[in-house]
Amino acid sequence: MKKTDTLILIFSALGIIISAYLSYTYFSSEQTTFCLSGSGCDVVKESPFSKVFGISVPYIGLLGYIIVVLTVLYKGLGSSRYSIIYYLSLVGVAFSSYLTYLEVAVIKAICSYCVLSAILVLAIFVTVLISKQFKSATSKNNKFILTSTIIFIVIIGGSYIAHSGVRKAAPATKTMIELAKHLNSTNSSMYGSYTCQHCNTQKLMFGDAFKYINYVECNPGGQNSKASLCSEKGIDSYPTWEIKGQLLQGAKSIRELARLSGFKPQKPSSDK
Image 1: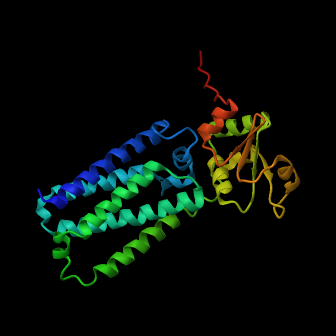
Image 2: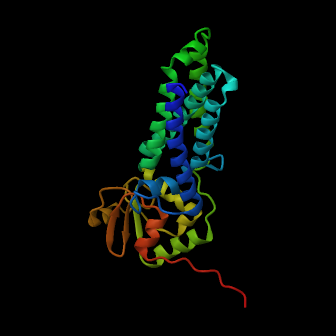
Image 3: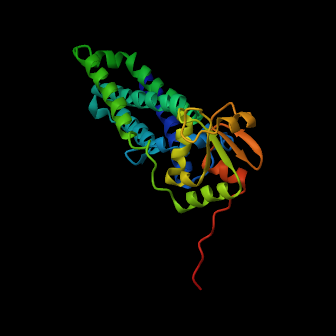
C-alpha cells in the first residue's frame, strides 16, 4: 500500500471515530467526554447551527470520512481516485472552515472535537495535494484550480443559505418550555444586548420558549432597556445569567441551565 493511501486511511479512521462518537452523543444527548459540562462542546452541539438542512453535522462528517475510505480502497478507480479524494476533502475543508467561523464569530464557543475533525480533513487534503499520484492525475487538467475555487465558494454559500432560517425562533419542545418557565419562576434572568450575536444564539436554543425567560436588555439603545440595572449588577459581559443569586458569564447549554437551576423535567404520567 502506498504511503499516501496509508496516511489518508489513518486520518480518515480517526475522523470516523470522532464523528461516530459525536453522532452517538448527539443522538443520545450524552455529555461529551473530556468536555466540561456547559463547555463549548455542549453549547455548539445544542445550538441551532448544529444541523444543515435538518441533518446533524456529525452525521455528515461520518458519511464523508467513510466515502473517503471506500474511495482509497477501491483500486478500480486507478489514479483518478486521488482526484476524487481531493475534491471530497476540499468540500470538507470548505465546510469545516464555515463551521469554524460559526464557532468563533457567531456561537462564541469552541468544540475541541470539531476542531480536531477539521484538522484531520485538512490533513487529508494536504496529503493528497502534495502527493505524486495527484500531481500526475491533474497534470493535464488546467481547470482544476478554477473548479476548486467554485466548489469552495458553493459549499460555503450553500451552508450559509442552509442556516439562513435558524436565526428565527423555532417551535420549542415541551421540556424546553418547562425549563424556560422554571427559570422564570425561580427568578433567574438573562442579561444581554440586542447587538450581541452570542446572546442571539442563546435565545435560539430556546426557540419560541424564550418568551418565558426573564430577559434584561442592557444596551441603552435597546428596546425596554434596563441599562441602569445592569450597571448596578456589575454586568460587563453578555450574555450573563443570574441563577440563584449567582452571576454566570457566557452562553450556557440547555443541560447546564437545567443543572444550575435545579430543573427536573416532568415524567409523563402513565395510564393505570
